[in-house]
Image (cartoon, rainbow, N blue to C red):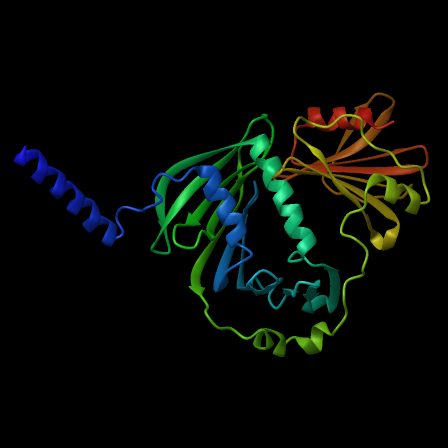
Length: 340
């Protein structure tokens, strides 16, 4: 009896000591779906600053971008590209009302709706539900990123032929410190990670604005919604709306939008992680390099295959159509053949 009692006391002291040292986490049994949910939330809630490196993997060579990143709460983010020279100085600033993208060597400023808006917050919740429906979230062995203990979770598609994602999540803040994205064929195409990471308790937004306000100005994004419904967009465009009758399993319509100054309609479909974009406009000459001819029925299209996506362009009934997605040629063909 005394032996069992002392053994129990020693065991409790052992657990307490290791918990103090941080070797045993109170959340050791947390489910991977909960880790994912918390990490998505943390991306838009923390005050932090860091240097982020993104590496793009292609058959020819790898490309590396580095950028200075600042996040302030739910509605402010700032990204300044540091290298390579082609991108150096590019600024993307999102203040919750507009997202401004300035490319200095082209002296071009583009203004888009904010990704930090309440409308996008609702969109992220819907995407998470879709993601959990179409992907299995599994937990891998923990790792250390920048010396910080991190969860590792994998998003594995339930339907073959879709992209996959690995996320390395800081245990303390639930902020994703590293990501690896694989294409539909299972090949690593993008890896991004913070090479420095600091939580900021105080940071003035004015300091982020100070040096770039002269360039970015006060222009705001148009008040039009980020996405229209099919009924709304059908009343706006000047041509008959075409919608594919077939989509790969798990994909749903996210919304419709206008691009290229309102001349082109874009339908966006997603399964939570993968994205398929379907463009349509009055017939135009779409220039494309490194393509192959592809026939489907009485139609002929131009197909370009890259590591991260496939692009298919074809003409029909005085209209030009463009389909882009990280899916198989077979699925691309099935979508095209379903467009009536």
